Amino acid sequence: MREPDGSTHGACAELMHNTQMFQQGDYARNPIENSQVGLRLHSIAPFGLEFTLNYFYQRWAGDDGTNYAPLKGLPKNNENIALSQNLVRRGIFPAEAYMPYVHTFGASANYSDEAFTQAVFRAETVYDVGVPFFDVAKETVIDTPALPGVRRMDMWKGMIGFDRPTWIRWLNKKSTWFLTGQFFWHYLVNKPSCVTKNGKTLGAEDVAQLSSEGKANVGSCLVGGLDLPSSKRLGTVSAAENGSPAYRDKIRD
Image (cartoon, rainbow, N blue to C red; front, side):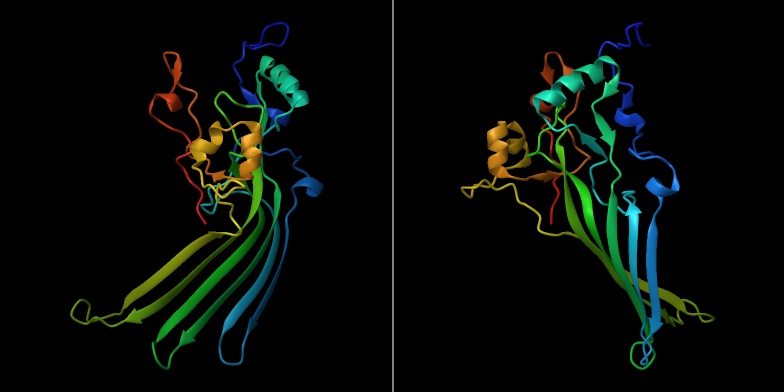
């Protein structure tokens, strides 16, 4: 409940700019700010390879398994610290649900090999430009518990697979069995590795404890959104200080 002066005693009940986690970013639901556009070229090569080339300009939805950053906090500086204190008094958490536009380039193909394997081979791939990730080397005004800043990175993702109807008569004399296999990958392009300028490699937990100058010396250290520090307090000691370190959710290449 808000007090007459608009304060909520530090209990935050909403995000900045009226955004909502996983639902609404800082944009209006109109054709200018919420439209997506794409192109698709489909063709079949003379030797039987069917393929598509694709482009999609989309609001990042984070629905493909990428361990992205759904929140973007205010960068830490004197002006934003004062702003965040005012926001918290009004019950607004000083961060927004973050759903930027990203460029996605893709391709898909399938080929039916009747001569040798009697299987259909399939492949799909996309390259996303500017996916948001948490970076503990970037500070925000939120430090209890700490919310890292956001760094946008490129990702290459794909799948290769095969399908094959196969007779296994001792199991089924009347029809074939459908055998299929798929291999998926996510690859983070040019991922920084939590290395200082003098070549020392640190863990994300260590980087989080550094001063602002120390974090600038590291440059970048990415973590996922599934293991941020806990706000739960055990007496006067935070959960992270009581044997449950945060930032174990590493982002790997």
